[in-house]
Amino acid sequence: MARKRILITGAAGFLGSHLCDRFIKEDFHVIAMDNLITGDLRNIEHLFPLENFEFYNHDVSKFVHVSGELDYILHFASPASPIDYLKIPIQTLKVGSLGIHNLLGLAKDKKARILIASTSEVYGDPNVNPQPEEYWGNVNPVGPRGVYDEAKRFQEAITMAYHTFHGLETRIVRIFNTYGPRMRLNDGRVLPAFIGQAIRGEDLTVFGDGSQTRAFCYVDDLIEGIYRLLFSDYAYPVNIGNPDEITIREFGEEIIKLTGTKQQLITKPLPTDDPKQRRPDITKAKELLGWEPKVSRAEGLKITYDYFKSLPQDLIEKIEHKDFSTYNK
Ligand code: UDP
Image 1 (cartoon, rainbow, N blue to C red):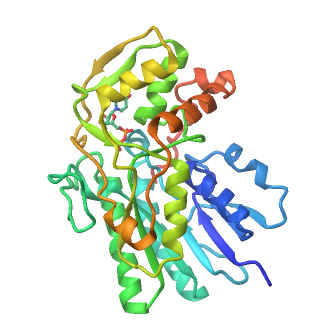
Image 2 (cartoon, helix red, strand yellow; image 1 turned 180 degrees about the vertical axis):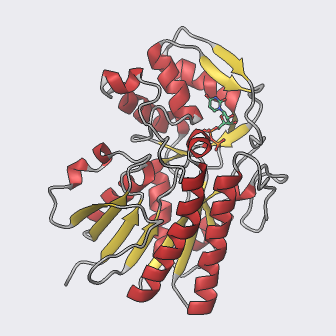
């Protein structure tokens, strides 16, 4: 039987590259796409020799062409860290609006099922904790996070419209904070920031008083949840994340213990609109997909720390190695 064909956008990124690995393992033909603004070919270079893997360097906010049949699309292209979307706000908006429009058009044309990466950011700075899918959120559209939050909210809206109006098979995953190997050490997110600082012998920068909470999911658990959702028959959003909630200050202390660094926590100003609390309600994922996270933070952090330690020295030293300046068109 011919292999099923799947298009994965954002394929050279953190989650995209893990999805490529999973679908290759399941014997799919993987068509990978990325414009490499925040993605990195090193994440997928081990797949290039395979006959069931192809890669296109393309920006999906421009017309997307794929020749031949297509059974599935996973839309994971987007900057995804607060630092990134502050630097490339226009690109962030475009990939979540023009990009998804192109991919929905492609899905309709090919009669493919499409799953889109949404985010806990659709809940903004939430007034309820944990957040169930029914919660509509508390988002500031014109704040610094607005470019990401509103693009993702638009993405959900247009995906539902294609589902109801065109009968397209659609899936929406709301991804909560996720970590693991292949995160960019310098993307500004808290976990690579803390581990990078520990490895370089710098103090760990806690933003605000550190009482804000997050709940961190190990990447393998997340990929399993997404895989199950794709093959479910549920078109409404589903939260995938680990409900094990922790304050950022406690998290910093865990990283100090894990890495054995002699450095300490120091305080920096809290960024604008930084959510005070975040934790997924995963009742739906449990009931619909029989899914729940399996990897504890202790296990996941150990694997991730070992990965970061193994990176070449120049990646560890350099705080910023990407020039985004030409992308805000
Ligand atoms: N944070 C921090 N120090 C850092 C980077 C982030 O204290 O060096 C905080 C940030 O203010 C937020 C939390 O850690 O409250 C998670 O931030 P991240 O950027 O990882 O993702 P978010 O969940 O805010 O999208």
